Length: 107
Ligand SMILES: [Zn+2]
Ligand SMILES: [Zn+2]
Image 1: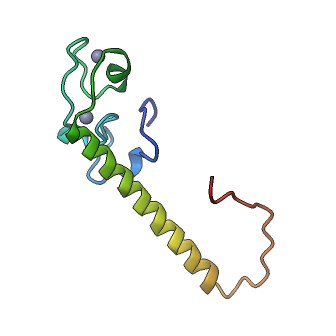
Image 2: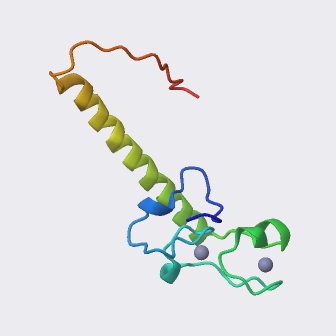
């Protein structure tokens, strides 16, 4: 799944209710639920380039869709982070940690 120009944190694989086609690259909804209008210039729907080159503007519904998706992605990340913490605390088999990778958490 390439060619989509997703907003930060938008990931094709973790949008609920999306099949292989989705989500829309502009409103982040599943393609069947896309709330984007057709571009008066080229007739495309849900094409980010129309917003950059053809003078289209995001409306409120689109912004809500994008923000919901952004939050969904953050929630998934949070879930992963909590699971990882749980693993660090409760994994009793590994007693000696020797990790040479220091991630910048506040980037
Ligand atoms: Zn759309
Ligand atoms: Zn267009």
